[in-house]
Amino acid sequence: MFPLHTAAFPSSASDLERLLNESLERSFVTASPPVTVLGQEYPHLEAITVSLDGAQLRPDAPRPSSLSGETSPALEIDQFNLSASALSLGPVALDLALAARNVQLRQGKDSNDQITLSLDRAADGTIEISLAQADLEALVSKLAQDQAGKHGITIESVKLTMQQENPHSLAVQIQLGARKLFLAASLRVTGQLDLDDQLNLKVSGLNCTGDGGVSTLACGIIKPYLEKIDGRVFPLISFLPLGEIRLRDVRLTVGEKLSITAEFRGAN
Image (tube, rainbow, N blue to C red; front, side):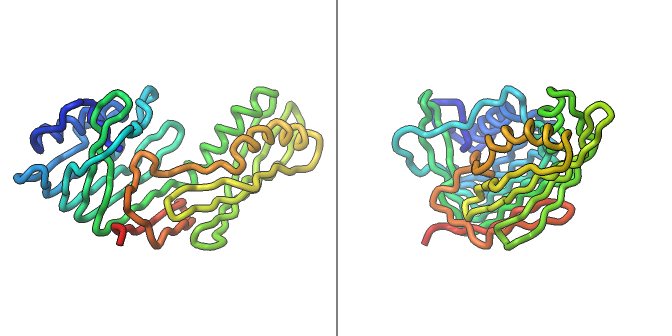
């Protein structure tokens, strides 16, 4: 969604550019205005380019808008590009790239009667999302330490291993080195990641095992947290509803980075 925070539809390409920049800067800290709009035949545009490279999500960022009521055609764009390398989303940073050709946006109103734009159709395009495995390990380490530290347990090491099962699934194992006073233990957290064709990532099969008293204690502390997220589905692009667009060739791959790629096209 692209909330414009106005009740009146922008009257020109420059007005649209201003409103889009103001909207994104409510959510992200950026080094310069992130949006460029090109076009002499508004509301037909040559291009919209969004650069969120190095941007940081604000801790008080507004929640994504939701449309209420009917929508109507708003803009036609020959080329839409979004780049967000090293995009900081709280505890993690990821790379996001989206490119689309012959795009149509629709307009609607949110609950405050403010105009919001949504992606409706595109002739074709690509999406790529990637996250460094080292950043994932750091995130897991922080989450584990936050839980274990409340009980006097220190997480000393984290080793994340992801094994490709098919283009949509990964088996995950996290080896944790833990210590309580002078007693050390090794924990294993296992689980599964499954990606569907609309870029929803499901976490399932989470379990914690280990040997010895400290391992049993640590797993007992971690398991309630695992139970909260076991079976949950995380929409990776909830901020960009795809409308009538259908994804294809969706792939989940792992190496130094966890990468998610997809191509898309408009509905037939």
